[in-house]
Length: 264
Image (cartoon, rainbow, N blue to C red; front, side, top):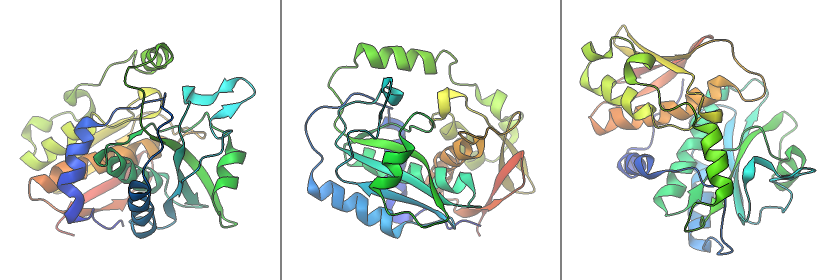
């Protein structure tokens, strides 16, 4: 079971979730040491899920987003990065949950980010942080100041990922019109969460007073759908908290992922 999100940051992160956009092209302007210190502090202290953590790389190696075909994931120019780490046996949703909290803090600081789960250099990522023998890198994100205008490269990448638009609430949460206000708000907030290629695998149901999130189809080995669901869970919990409902998540076996239990 996870710990709840920190109440002192809930409103800040909820507002940031509305503003967050994935950006892939960055300027030469470095992130301030003050902002990096804040992210590093949060990465050290925020560990709500066992075996999941985030490491800040202040000076990202040039090859982190590069490969033999050029810029992996379309990311270029970022000076710093977040590296999302999990131990063997760690719940992928825990990595997604912990990572998205750091992404939202970066957004609140006025910085730009972009989840990159499959197209990055695993070797450069592993060498840029200190990994325990049982840990691996699940995903990374650039951190920096995005170009003022969306580049053509970003438009192409954005268009490919967003050919499928946001799923309507009724599709991901059938019958939610009859749910409590906090649960409906949680589902609505989850619809804007990022996911690999915008696949939006999450599905919600209200069961025995709690909000259950699962995914459709089979899980995928390269970028787990459970990780995507963990990202959406942050958005859902933030919406619940803003409506006065706090709680925690308990892990469930696939194809379910977790249940948000109010008051626990």
